[in-house]
Amino acid sequence: MIGDSHLRLLLHTDRCSSKLLFPMYDLADSILAPRGCGDCNACCVELDIPAGQVSTQPKPAGTVCPLLCASGCSAYEERPSSCSEFRCAWLRDSKWPDAWRPDQSGLVCQREMIAGVGPVGTMLEIVPDALDTTKAGTMLETLRRSTVAVIVVDFQRRRQTHPGYLRFDTGSSVSPSAVTVRSTTHSVS
Ligand code: SF4
Ligand code: SF4
Image (cartoon, rainbow, N blue to C red; front, side):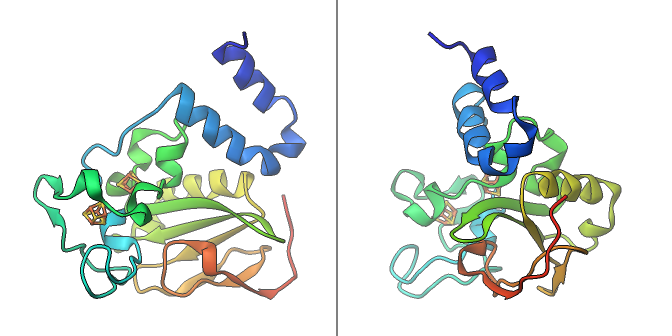
C-alpha cells in the first residue's frame, strides 16, 4: 500500500513535469490534507452563476449571491454545482499558508487546465490594493511555477498580462474557462 509520504514523493520527483502534474498535486492535497473554507465566502461574490440556480436571474461575477447570509450559504446542502465544484488554489493546495486564503489576502487564485494551452492561473483582486503587497508578489510567483500563464485581474476588472507570459482575455469571470488566446508569444520559466 502506498502511504502519504510515498505519494507526495512520487508527485514531487520530476520538477520538469510539475506543470503537467499540478492536478495530481491538487488531488493528493485534497485527499491527504483536506481543508475547509472557514469564514471565507469570496467565491459567493466572485463566481458567475447561470440563471435558475441561485435565483431566476443570472448572478454575475462581483455581486453577492442572494443565498449568502450572515452565517454562510443558506442553501449549502442544495447549492448548485457551480459553487460545490469551485475550489480556489488556496483550498486545493494545503501548502498555501492560511494568510493566502482569499478573505485574508484579498486575492482569489485559481488553476485550471485549458485544452490546447495547459495549466493557466488566475489571480483576481477582490480588495483594493491587495495586488500591491509583498504577499501578492509571492503568491503570483508561486502560481507562475505551476502554470504556463497567469492572468491578473485587478479590482477594477482590468486585466494585466504578466511579463513574458501569454496574453489572454478572460472576460469578467474569475474562471479562465472562457479564455481566448490573443497572442502566442510566451515564455515558460
Ligand atoms: S474563495 Fe476559496 S477558500 Fe474562499 S470560499 Fe471560495 S473556495 Fe473556499
Ligand atoms: S449558493 Fe451558497 S455557496 Fe453558492 S454562491 Fe450562493 S451562497 Fe455561495
